[in-house]
Length: 171
Image (cartoon, rainbow, N blue to C red; front, side, top):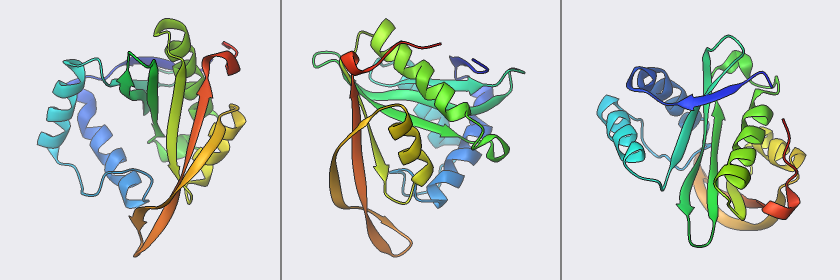
């Protein structure tokens, strides 16, 4: 694997904010307003004090941060979590880094965290994430109609999931 996952630190927040605001503009996330420095700092404090969200930065083979991956709304009773992933470095998109990062996350979620179900919500215009989830054998569970408002219209979201017995640990 060319990537490595590591803890997000305060010095990462400025770059993460730029990337997050960019993908919000593309309508790929639930976020509905641009983030500022205080928003980012509050977010990092919140996720480091809670086990509900496990977020990690994605580092390339040169230890340069290129994105973020994690599990949100982790439910330890039902053993499930929601995927959060983006490759923020535009020049690194479409090169397989997202697939490697999501593979590492699935290995961690099913292996280390002993989760049973990992799922994601993807808006229908986010074709790259749909392709990524399907390539890793996530199954489409359903469609949430008019789930997101983007570019002056409502768009559907697809719900995808993968179960622990459907995942094969890979390196």
